[in-house]
Length: 250
Image (spheres, one colour):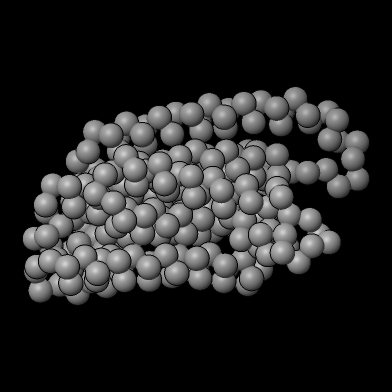
């Protein structure tokens, strides 16, 4: 049943002109950024040749591209998740779904998987850009795969947060704004942290960006993996509990 709901959610996204438009705009913008990064790398070739351990194309093209992609996808996620429950609550179709013999876990996870599959498709298209450089350049595949994994885990985490916030209101716009505000706050929270303060160190640990940057550096740390998995599970758990409450009220 989870896969049925996921397929329904996935199809609804691809049937939406908004999703296609956003995906096309993202790919076009990132393609332009990619071309600029490649041109800058070519201009730097003369100066990099004199360094003992010069940064490669993965460091100067792929990693910056993934950083820009993370920012853009953070703006996209609220627009996709806001319809997951908010729109269905407003139109009344959620009442029909909740009255069906389907578990709350299956409903929430199905919608989550459907939206995440759409976003992971965008990640694959983004990853094809630096991979195309393998034709004429030497890529650090370890760093590249770490970057792809980091971006995928980031999308899994922020999608879970968006799903939960979508369950809190019947207004999609409110859900989108709340999701964007939360994600930006968690992205920049480490800017107020310092190495000397325990409380600020905790804030730094909560930062989405800090854990993502580790992957872009080619570092695979189990703590970063655990952070994203626990983040996703926590918000999915909150979403399941919220939908359970909605079902009991009905």
